[in-house]
Image 1: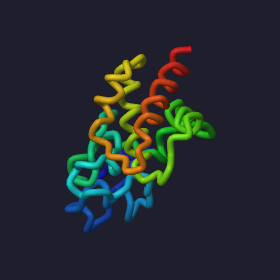
Image 2: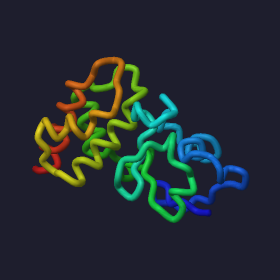
Image 3: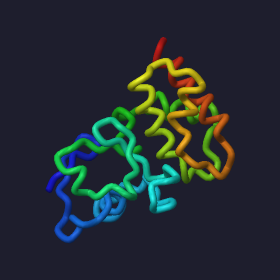
Length: 153
């Protein structure tokens, strides 16, 4: 069984077919940006993009990703650069502990791909399921809006 991860085909190793996408991403493939948070799809730390849509990889069987495109934070940026969301994250000094950031950035990138100029309410709705214990939600919103402004130029 193959999964296209960050543009590259990857075979799911034997013995890993019954695991979650998150476990396969992190363990045999070494892609550790998506984090294990709650284990029940509630916090968003494990969010990746599946065919461009945000999904919670901690509850998604790896078999559900067979033949599909998965994007992790490691694959979001173009070679040698940063994605506009990553640039905005830095400009707005969003990270504190950083645990939730990967999932939030991927959800933000998916939002901007679907709605290039979102309103603050649309940003809040798209990121509502992403828990941040550090309280950086206001900086997250500002970063997403900054990324939208930069992409529109």
